Length: 137
Picture 1 (cartoon, one colour):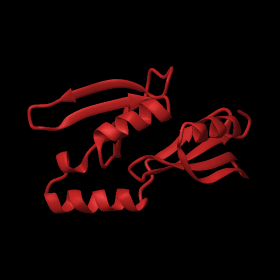
Picture 2: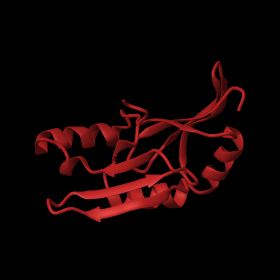
Picture 3: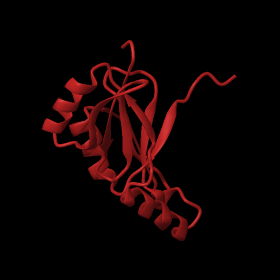
């Protein structure tokens, strides 16, 4: 049966830039950078120390059914309309300060929420993530 999520797709506008952002600014580990026969690039990263879930940094142009759909997805990403999910941290305020020093854009600084402390960050393509320290961590 299903026992978790292994890979999450994150739509990006430029895979080279995304690789640099996720590895250089967020500190993720590069796990794959493979060019496939059909021109698609399988580019995956994961948080440091993790042995589980990865992000595939995917260009919509290589995975959508048609060019029009790919352009629509790219426009939504660039607009900042998409959120791939929540990035977990055990020290939201401290990690926020480190990431700001690395040049990561935050649209909201850390704030107390009913579920913990949350900040909102954007990647270099426009995707936004909740950056959350859950209560009790």
